Length: 219
Image (cartoon, rainbow, N blue to C red; front, top):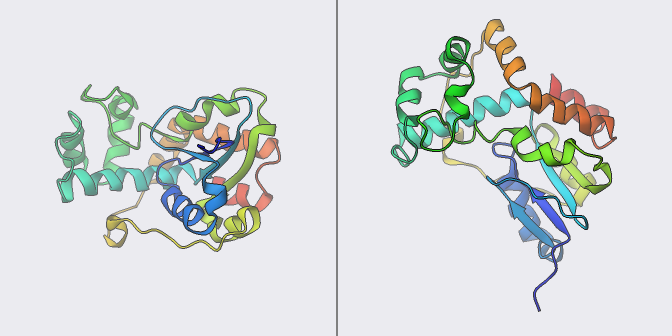
């Protein structure tokens, strides 16, 4: 008999979701059988579900997502033909600072278009709000089981799920990428990522983030 899923794990890209999911599956097998895994897909709210969420500071997540795609599309060329225009934009910009300057000139539409539109950057398109909008745009505080933050992951996993997490490392983590952002670029990203910060504020308002988690996410 198939186990009934009572929990959805929302793996927001570049928020240590792979490490969380691997740890749940390997260390809490009975719990994992109750969980639906959601990644790179829109969330559908179930009336009888609880939700586990991974979060990260939105600007740090943006930087990580940009270089994740740069690694996959330009450096290794594993996915250089996957999405129209993605390779060209990444080669043109080369650094996250230059990419934000392109946003300043041309608007955030350069990465928020539909797949194959020529204005789509995978993982940047799927931001925090992409995943959490159905939750935060309603009265759903009672549906949230746990919020795990990458910045405080080991403590969060131990406190909220009683798991001693083992980190899952991606191939690009040891590469040295230029993560510098000017004050102007930070201001631009604060505006562009305002919906992500809205999600964080909502979760904090609902009491689903500790003071420590909240401060780590917004600093």
